[in-house]
Length: 73
Image: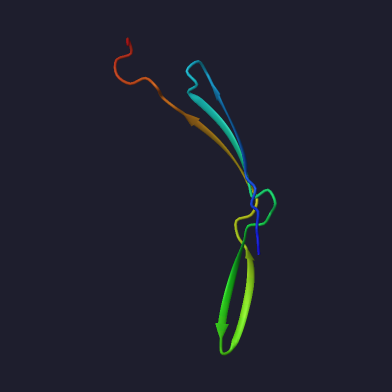
């Protein structure tokens, strides 16, 4: 059994020193993220499939301070 889980992401940095980053991620674009559980009880085998964390989108904002020490340098 094969699964292809596609993810996509894009990021862009702003400001003079490229200190501010905005990014958008899309995960599990094909809705194929499932969990498979195999159980054996009293000569019986069973297999169940449960949906786990499916497709979701994430927006992040990151700040990267680049100046450390005295402000004049």
